[in-house]
Structures are given as structure tokens and as C-alpha cells.
Image (cartoon, rainbow, N blue to C red; front, side, top):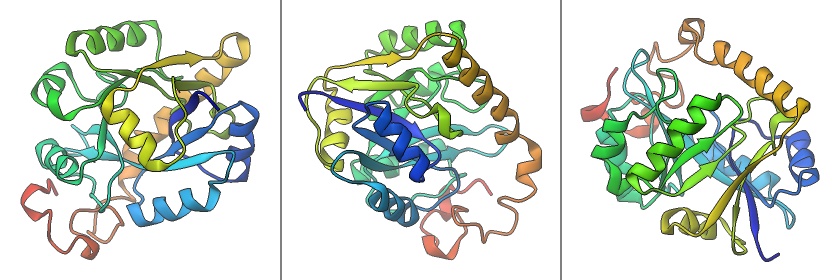
Length: 251
């Protein structure tokens, strides 16, 4: 293996996902489900990793409150970080832990880092997502413009919430990466890479399916079951965080 093909952000992980990833020729996945604490993410990633597919644990942290949340993808965390803390608090914690910090879907809908966020945290961010199946042409153009403006490496992901989307997009590094630590270092060090995605009617249909799924993911109905009591796994008031994030919690 002289190169490494990574789907750098998937939300689901089971036998079907692994089978599909291998069939698509991937070497690795970053598994970063919503509202799931790092120990559980790490355990599941390890369970589904083998010699043919490296599953890397990640956390897409929701910073800010529900109405004004900004997603940030952290890879290589050593300790759990909750959702719904300030962006500044999250960035400081990622920096302290030495994680690779990625900007998924910048300026997309109302759930993303904007140009002023990227400018403010430029030195703590290691990559900008330039393609995922939820993008339309204007999103692709704008995200590439932001990557050039801030001179940050590009990456692409399937952002798969549905199993059949896994491997529709990948980031191909120009060298082999064999461990989680290798992937984190490649992301942080700006190792040369290229972003690819499948084309044709099937790809467009999968893009449409993923975009349709977005409505549920961002509905207020979901909030009814999340972040109301302080007992949810990634609520900053959860006992597991031992009050460490009280000063930067937004709830």
C-alpha cells in the first residue's frame, strides 16, 4: 500500500459499512457519530478495525447552542469533550489534547464554521472540507475558496448517515498510513492529498438521499430528546465530565 484512501467522516459503523468500505477500496474511515462519548466511539472503532480497514475514532462536537451551533470535527482526542460548549472553549481543549481539528462543511446551512471563525482560529485548524454528498456546486466552490484563502489543506468525506453513501467520497494521501496516530499526524502535518468522489446517476441519487436525511438530523424534534436534563452522554453537565466544562457550557 503506497497510498491511503480515507473516508474522513462517517456517522454509522457496522458490518455493512465495513463491507462497503472495503468493496469501495478504502483503507480507512473516521467514525464520528453524533452525541456519543469518546470511550464508546473508540471502543466501536477498535471493534471494526482489522488489517484491511483502519477505523479512526473522531468527535464532531456541536459548539454553541442549538440555534447557533457550529460543528467542529476533532480526530485524535485523548479525553472526552462534550457538545454545546463555546467554540473558543472547544478549540482550546482540542489544542490542549493535540488533536487534529477539521472544519466540516464550512458556511453550510446554520451548523458550520464561517469565514470569521476560520480566521479567528486559523492556527488551530488543520483542514477544510471541500466536498461531501450534501454539497451543491456553490458549496463546493465556496469551500475551495475558503481553503485557498486560509491556506488550509482540503479534505473530502462521504459524511455518511446512510450505509450506501460510505465511500462515495474519499481523501487520498500520498503515503501509507497504518495507525490512528499516523492518520492524526497526516491531518495535522498537511501531508499531500487529493479529494475524489464518484460520479454518475447513482452518485447523484445517493447525494439526494443524504440531503433528504439532513432535515431529520437538524429538526427541532430531535432537540425534544436531547440536552434537556443534563444526563445525556455528551451534555456538558453530565457527571462524566466532572464539572470541567462548566465555565464554557452554553446550557
